[in-house]
Length: 347
Ligand code: 13P
Ligand code: SF4
Image (cartoon, rainbow, N blue to C red; front, side, top):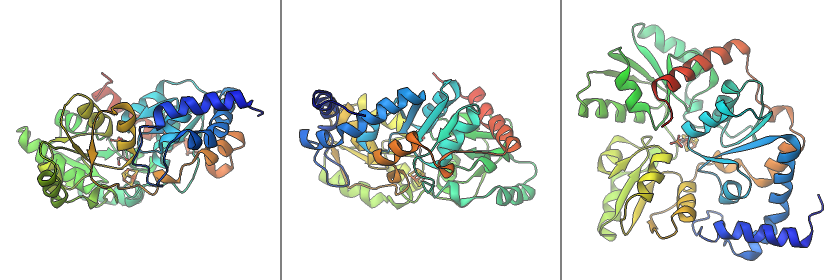
């Protein structure tokens, strides 16, 4: 595409209005006009390609800000993005996130061509349990209702009764009639679920698998005590993939969407966000008046996405960038996801 100098400058201005607020870029980038000008031809090209292909870009909030604010049509957490994938009638969905999210989009929107920029964008949770391993576990607990976290493969979803996300896990498990729940693959979220059911006075036996998120399992209660000492009035906001001792010491625990909402609707002098650093970038753009403290933890899988890979995948996707699923697996996985939507409709 031959973008004129005028178009490029206007695009750089558009990017700058959002990106100028991000000062936690893990690559050490300073988002000034020159940095925006350098990527403007690429974001213009991607936005043109989207029109040509009838493509929609869904981006998880952990992604780099130039993807979220430069080319994404929808940005958010796993629940929101799966809902979008389900209701969109786009012929092409490019999922800027990780592979299990793109698989979920394909399960829910089978007629669409679903593309991932990088096939290696896995997830330590999804990779922790295969369909065969789940079938083995199920044989040990034949009376349990099998609840899978959305961070799981299509095979695992296909072998589960109901799917949940970080935003609806407690509400859905509370509603299930079974007392015995086999919760996979996140052991730490399963531990948090057990604590929350007890707190709500709900009698459930929660059996877990052994996966963890390689980003969230690194946070410790010491991170919280140290930050509270240093920053009076601090609010600590954690994701339910964090260890139980961290969740217990936080002021709020919820999905990345709920974490954003909590920050936007509270007025603390400082926030410590116990999640992947991309979410802080989003909040710096959308709540520039808030102050965030603490270091940056990165998900190496989410960070495999880039504008260049998105452009190339939209232009001419390689076979490994196109999500395909056996139809029987897709249908069973769709049933598991539809159970979630029935038990936890969008507000
Ligand atoms: P959310 O659905 O809360 O965005 O979580 C997705 C995820 O991968 C967290 O690590
Ligand atoms: Fe998976 Fe953790 Fe990365 Fe989320 S942050 S995609 S759970 S590895």
